[in-house]
Image 1: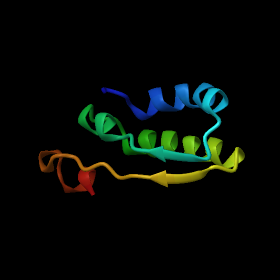
Image 2: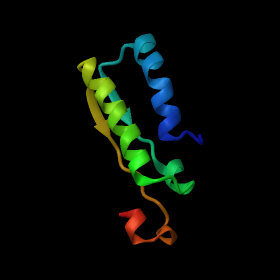
Image 3: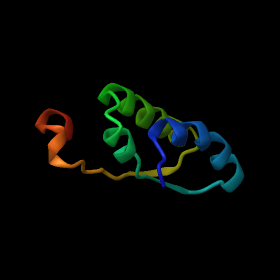
Image 4: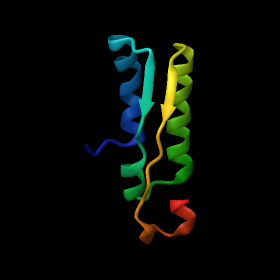
Length: 77
């Protein structure tokens, strides 16, 4: 959908309070990667989302995203 980890992080607090889930599945980062955003930025956003979910005692499933190999092995690994 074009969502980045930054957009997911910005929307997560409202989404959690509105829907009150028991499980949170995070599958973001692919669009960040395609935009060439710094890995530290992506990791920080994902970590903050996990921390928010842990405060609500949610079960968390973090799914990986795979980028095209033309981004180079350092970035795609």
